[in-house]
Each structure stands twice: as C-alpha cells, then as structure tokens.
Length: 346
Length: 239
Image (tube, rainbow over all chains, first blue to last red; front, side, top):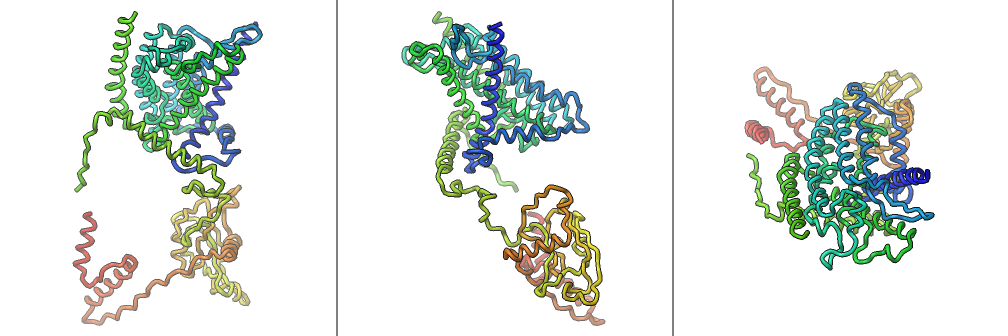
C-alpha cells in the first residue's frame, strides 16, 4: 500500500515538475529569442513577462476547436494525442536525482528504475512519429502531408545514429538502466578527469546530441515545420489545444532529451571531484542532487534555445546526407573503437 | 545574364561545421548579454529596435499614412462631399455605399455643393486601405486619417457611417493631424483644334501630350524624340 502511494506521489510530482519546466521553457525560448535578436520579447504579462505561458495556455484552451471540413476526422484527432502521449511518458525512466530517505523509506528520485532503461525512451520516443504522420495525413493539406513525410523520413533516419551512439554507452557501462549509469559516473577517470560519460564517449556525445536535435525536430533540423517553406508543416491545420499539445509535447521532449544527455554523458547529479553524498544527510543530499541534476538539465535546455536562434535550417538533402553519410558511419566507427578499447582493457 | 556565383572551397574545419556553430553561438551570446544588461537599465528604449507601443506613442506617423477614413469639411465648415460616387466605383473591395441627396433651400451652410451624400457607409471589415477613394475624390472629401487603432468588439461597430466619419475629421483636426492638401495636378492646355489639312499632326501632338501627362511624375524624357523613348522602353523590358 505504501509503495503504491509513493509511486503515485512520485508520478504526480515528476509529471507536474516536467510540465512546469516545459511551461517555463516556452517563456525562456521566446524571451531568449528576443534578447538574441535585439528586441525585448514578451514583456507584458507579469514581471518580465513571466505569466506569458499562462496567458498562452488560457488562450489555447478557450479557443474554438475547428476540424477542417476535408480532414479525416479520427486521424486528425488522434494525431496530437499520439504525439503527446509518448512525450508525457518517455521521461519515466529519467532519474531526477539520487535517492532520498524519508521516514526510514528509501525513495529513488525517478518514476521507475526499469532494467531496460533508455531502450524504453527509444521505443516510446519513436512512437511520436505516428503522431506527426497521422496529424499530417489526417489534415488533408499539402503542407501538412509534406511536413509529415519529411518528419517521418528524418526521425526514422536519425533514430539509427541515435541508437548506435547509445549502444556504445551500453558497451562502456554494461547496463541500460539510467540510474546505474548515473551511479557509475562518480569518481575520476584516468586520475584527472571527472568520471563522466563525455570523457569516455566524446564522439558518441556529439553524435547523440546531433541526432537528438533531429529527433526533437529542432533547428537546424526543423524541416517538418519549416515555416518559410511549408507554413507550419504537420500542424498547419491544427488550432486550439490540439496545436497546444503538439507544441507542448515538443518542449516535454526537450526536457526528456536533456535529462538523458545529462544522465548519460554529464555525470547526472555528481559534481566533479567531490562526493557530496558522503558529507550531506540523506534528506539534504536528495534535495541537493535533485538541484544539481536540474541545473545541468537547464543548461542543455538553454542550449536548445541558443542553437535554435543561431543556426539557419539545413536543406532537406543535407539533412538526409548528414544522417546517412556522416552520422551512421561515424557511429559505427565509434562502436568499433569502444569495443576495441573494452576488449583491450578488460 | 545571371551573375556567376563565386563558389568558395570550404576547408575541412568549415565542413565539419562544429567550430562554425560555436562561433555563431558566440555572436548570439554577445547579443544576448548586451540586451539583458540593457533591459535592466531604467531608461526607455534601452533596446533600440523596439517601441513599447501602448505606453510610448511618440513614434511619428507619416502624413500620408492610410488609416481610418474621414469626411472632410471645407473652411466654412460645410461638407465637401458631392456624392458623385467615384470612390464607391473605384473601390476594389466594394466597401463604400453612398446615397445621394439634393441640397434644399437653407442648407447652403451645411453642404458645399448642390448634391450631398445623405448616407455614406464604409465597411471597415472589407476595406483594404488602398487609398484609391481619396485619390479619385474630385473634392478631396474622403481622406484616410492617421488613425490606426481600429479594433472593435462587434461587427456593427466596424461599419463607419457619416457621423463617425465626420467625428474622425473633427478628431484629426483637433490633434492637428490633417493631411496636407493634395498637390495640384498640372493641367495640360487644351490642344489646338485640328484644322482640316493638319489632322494627322494634330493627333500626334495630342498623343504626345497625353503621354507627357501620364509620365509627368516619373520625370520622363521629352517626348519629341518618340523613337528614342520607345527604344528605352524596349531596353527596360529586356532588363
């Protein structure tokens, strides 16, 4: 009974937390864009425009729901659902901190520590393609279909280097579980460097971050919704909260991806050279580890925004060429090197 | 002939692109830092490219801005409109409806001409603010003001009737935002009446003058050398 209660509380808390980050991210994105482009950005609602996401949410919720006359009704409705459901469930295996001990019970700060770990994220994440393609197809609009087709090709192609980059990580740590990988990153590597994944997998990290930008449909790989070419891509015909689900799911995906990057390559809740867990009490350490993890995640969230307002979009053939001709061979090479090192050292 | 594009051979580090990304990110980061610092300074317009519109209305609007319509009065306070219907006819959006009324005895101080518009409606929901109505108006009666805040709560409010149009004029007059009177179009003297023997020549002169009027604005060359002009036009087309 207690376990159930704890599980439910964890689910609700982490869900609310991720939603909160995603909501604030919409503000960070717009405000950051403004600052980078020499304009103030949304600054009307509340201090620094901080209530802007609330205003946006109210607007999206109260808007009239329109289903285009020629749209295929069920697919059209199913699209955003299929896109947002994976987004809302993929972060279940991301650790948000080390464990916390409350009332003699040990609680890990993760919804569930399943042994398939990030395979779960890959599996759930690739479901999002269905949301995009169904939304695009169901709208019966040329731009939507183009956007849907593009995103299908792109997401399917970039899942290969993404998976291969992650495979090398499995070679190094011998486990899929994100929590165990996080725990293994304590201490130092080669005596000098912090024992973080990025120092063991530098090429793998670059491959992973590039592929994950493409998976999240973010600039410079935002071809599915290329505003200047195909209006808004797969969500051209969407309005009100259905559009909101698409946009919101994207930000939730960003949180998940940033969490995975931090957990795999940037030492999760560890600070280089100091093992804070040994000095702090169990409750305090739980909170501190949560904060450290959040700070690292917020850096990568900021990186998404930063890159978005810096780079122009790739051409479509460039995206495909990069995926198949550069990333996949490099990922295979990375696996080869990793396997060789492991074979030689073990 | 299209200009040949200078193709640059990219170096290896440029083709790998990661270093270029970092350089680009340095640029955006500098802008970000500068603007964040600027936004904490107390003065208005710390970020120079933006006008904080509802609070800051100091921005000047061009005198030829095409905003909400108004019906002008002449210097004696009489309506200039003669209900000729030119504006309604030229309107590409068909948003103007006019009813003509005839001036009665004792209304000379109200209407400038013998006829006046007994009703004048402009549907702002249809209007595209092209300004053809004010260009074609022979009496400079209908003019577009500098008013641009036209958001309304109902559709009915968006239909401008005569009192509203006159009120717009009063408002613009009080604020001193009246449009400067139109420049007079140079009137071409009537061509000499063609005499029996010289008819073809007379026709040519007429044509040339018509062309001169048409091109007066564009500062065209003298039309005497028509062939040269034609050549030039041909050249323009080729370009």
